[in-house]
Image (cartoon, rainbow, N blue to C red):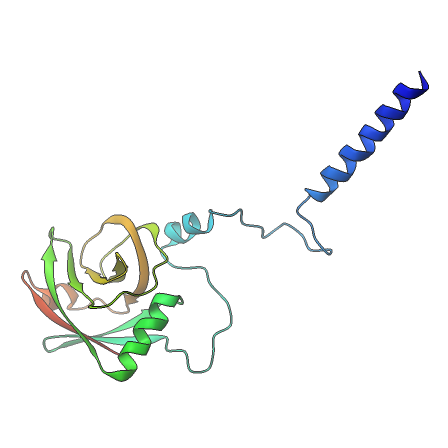
Length: 176
């Protein structure tokens, strides 16, 4: 009888120790803002923008210019590695891409190099600029759901669809 009590008591202590390690609370922090792994992309997809609020360096570029013919647009950039690499390219010279119409809702053009991708399933809307397959820039004048890396979004869509037209366009991306 004494042996059974000892086994049960020891088992209860082991279970209590294991469960206390699973509480999700470390060093007095709460789990109120805990986001389970893999759910960040769902939240970002729901609101259409990344949730990275980390501190930025002083020299981080937050805007870029998009020139299509005589029309110029300002883009608010995302905060990710793909944007950092694109900005580095634009510091040397504007990035000029020949873009073709695809399916009546987007223009697609080869970048000529690969950027670091952090794809997630998103639904785009007019004015979104994304990276596809790591080496193609896509600009939207409609909507699509696919796995992309967000690069930025046009600030003011006035004249956006007219500038893009219905055929191929040459688009220049620059930082200043």
